[in-house]
Length: 431
Image (cartoon, rainbow, N blue to C red):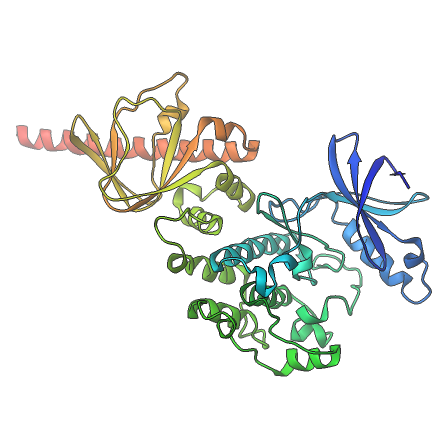
């Protein structure tokens, strides 16, 4: 088979019991894609054909609906005389299985960053009414640039659909207690499954080990696993606590929301990353979400900002920009405090969340920096250049424009208040 529909097959990427996945060229979009072709015999199976058809239709129904930096895009789905197949984004990299082995574990901070990105992606899916139901390392791809992408939404549960869902799906080692009991599911089943993935990424071992599915189910329902630090002593107690909460058997003791889960993950970065190390992407995202400047940005826009921005930590006393320098970038203070001076005289101080240097971006000609900005304490600084911003999406640029307008209005209001106060003071002094 050299072609299916309009897609020119390049090579086989993998094969399972019910489908095969091919690398293909999309001649119309000018990109490489992954095409999952469902085997005709699977759909025609007397006992399981309707089940396979339902799983295929579930994934096909998500065409064009999930757009997130950490979710594989589904471009197309076809069921006709050429066969049944789904066309999706091609990610040229391994799955997380590669990093769940004792001999190939990632640094703890990197493992937590990956899980953090999964929490944000699954939170996004939930807001579209989707629960994945089959979270496991094999369904999380790692791109060549290190980014992760969640894939395989064939088992997904639609919270907004009135159709009957397929039961008994999922991988036994990663199922939640309510899933193995075949009870109604919510996003908390994905939280439990991601807790298992986190345990495995950290330790190279599954929290529940068994020789058969019956034993696995018993452990999931009745056994509390040892903390991952038992297998990897350098894992901090705070990380053990996150895993323990994600793996609570009772849903009321488990994380109630993805936001709670991701907030705890972000909080542990302070103790894992030193000032001399680059700022991890999970910390960047969490920081952006907390800053007033980025209040109007959605999650997808914030990940764009993570990609296009440069982050740096500066010690107290460091000059960040100097008077008279050329520049076509602006800065947002992520943490700490800076002093703004001109000709050696203090103009103002800025706190975390405030912006400076924006006129170099907003101006229509090359501008020189009009003031010097110096770190008044240890700071974390976000820099966005004009060139980088021009490469972002229209939505992201629109968000920045709105944020700058709000900033300018706020500064004009503050300036008017100060002028009014000065005039009142002069009027009072003249009496």
